[in-house]
Length: 385
Image (tube, rainbow, N blue to C red; front, side, top):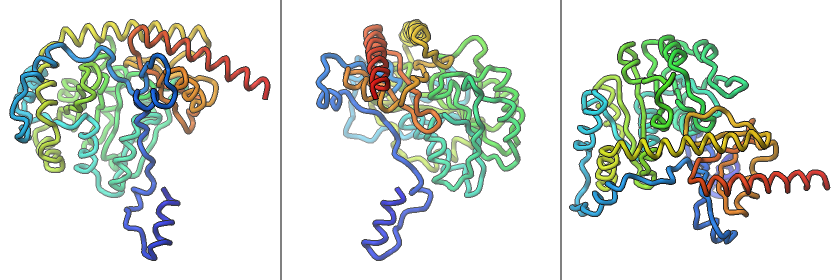
């Protein structure tokens, strides 16, 4: 980005107009699509395991509801009233505490616009969802990045130590993406209790449906009881199978938060079809439970297989696994693409790590076989080099 900016300065004879913070960003790695892999490598079968999607798709009720959709020539309801009422009723919260977005990352973006002033501190823990850092940096925030433990779990004590009166946003990705581990309820509560009264806790729970139960914190009632300022985010892109329609929601600690967040979002950011589909998906919790059960069983099976190969993944409470391939991740991902398997390679301090989503059993088998082939080929290449 720096070289692009400098080139623009030189050619135009004028200073480039971009904000300095923008020039420090790198494009989000959204991964390759099925069509591109088919065009490049023409594999007999493609296992798309790079984006943490739900391979089972949405409830059958969704297709039926979309088939009856009408009034597509009109703008959608800017307030998502029907969907709002459905979710508020189920969660037991006031409807005016809900906020909706074109995916939950849309809400993350306008949360940063709403809350951050230049110089405010934002606490996060890498590796985590890069959207936090990017949106905070654009708004001029100072990033306080707390190192994770050796097992990649959040370091609760270090996170608490990093919190000050200057902390404006505290991002708690739970379960964390890409590592998959969740913050136990006791640690979650201790961290939130330590947050300053002026700090807004952002509990990103995109994988909530896969993680809930056991020692996983029920953040909304917990934070309400604690009287904390917070925004809990969830999505229809994962367990509900609506990634292609992009709809997420957040629960704010108070209606005033939701009102101010609404001021910085575009009025029609959740389209009519997405609202219809989300209502239908929400109405069929049995379908969600079935999908989650199948995914967790496959996740555990894949984890055991990787461990047997000597690549034990980080403990995951989500629909993906993060593990050290012990070889350059980019090269391994490329080798997998040639075999029709899409995964996501990491970089930086985790340049040998891969994240693989959990798909159908056939997808997972294809991945395991392809990974073993790629690892063997890489080892042979290293030996002969």
